Length: 382
Image (cartoon, rainbow, N blue to C red):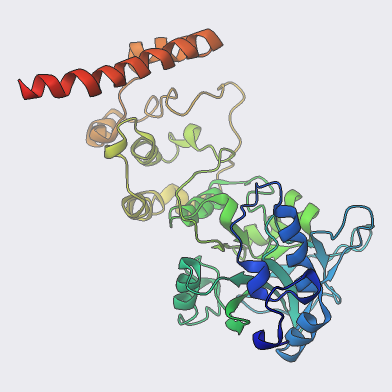
């Protein structure tokens, strides 16, 4: 790759380097960001960039043709053939009876990710990182961790294979895993709880990858994952480091509390309206591991996760998770139980279902905040 000193002071699209395309004041939502995006794709596709990666032992994916709308953000591997893999590299599911190139991938909305195969044909994802950024510091620390060689050694954070210096910034090399970890639907309780266990480690489903990929469209359908889940070979990993605890809406365990009673105090403490009283991420993880996962029922049975047809779906804070539980259990764990929704809250919710009611409540709250700011300080002074 051309050294930074050989690049013109004012780079053009033909002479861009990683610094000139990575550093920008524009956000992905800005109208002019598409120009930066296209320059980033052109940098990844340039002969000098591909040659540089080839010298490092990586063959970049090819970009899909898109003659009418500029560079495509979809790529596909040069050699998608099946091969033996070992953890932490992902399983692949090659589908050939389709017009879509097999194992295709999207580079996302920012164009800072690319894909490649190493000299053994294993698939990797490459992410550009700004020097000195918080994300680089996190990844630079993670690459000092031992590489997990099995699921048993894995802590559900995407392992870093290498971090390469490039034109004043960095390129993080990670195994390529699949997206849409919630597809297909979970078939039993163990599969759902395994995923929830991963989420409690400060993850959210948008930032979670799964160790089998087929292609951008087929990953959405979860092709080939049911068998690996049932064999305990499917696992999940954080691959982006904007951390938050968020349960996916498609995983509803409310109706399973009669089978796994410890879900009742766990879910109530996770969703209580008393925000300061909610579990922290660490507390939720500890409770889940000590009380939910250790339940004899969870350990012993593959309980179907389908909802009974005679039990209508309710909002999470309206559903009575304690209704069918043993009275002695309710008494033991009663301090975790969320009280019924106050009547005035129910009235306000119903009022806010109409546009005029929502405007009225919003106006009253603004007036209330204004009065508290203006009147209460004067009372304190007197």
